[in-house]
Amino acid sequence: MVEAEGRRYPFASVEALTPEVLETFPFEYAGREALVEITTDEFTAVCPYSGLPDFGTLTVRYLPAGSCIELKSFKYYLTSFRNVGIYQEHAAPRILDDLVACCAPPWMEVVLDYRLRGGIHTVVTVSHGRR
Image (cartoon, rainbow, N blue to C red; front, side, top):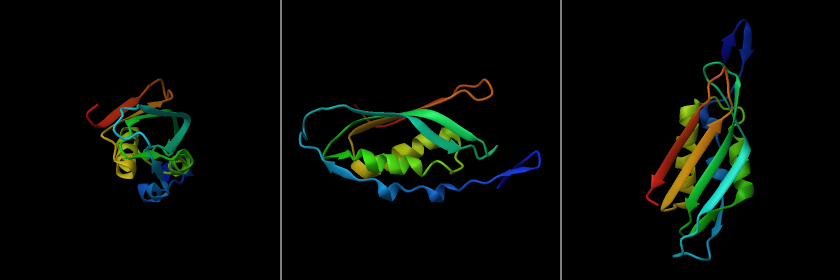
């Protein structure tokens, strides 16, 4: 629980995240380089310092090997961040780790572009493997 000016802003810890909901389906063109890009402007989590919500645009790019991320399960996974206290700099690496564990791509990049807060714009980019 975070206290700010006499108010309490409750949020969950990262243990509330649900990477187990992520599903895949077979990529029928294994061996062919195909770039998959997924973007949503509905990413939200909670700042563990202030307890206030952070909003951002999330972009995931990857080269599928044997499987692709099933999008409905991806949406459920992202929804699990909604009430979780996680620093902006930690959200993107956590998403990358969970997605790499899910579909084992040879290359993946996660870009989390947060909306302005207090006049500060943050973009976090992390990657796995080589393109």
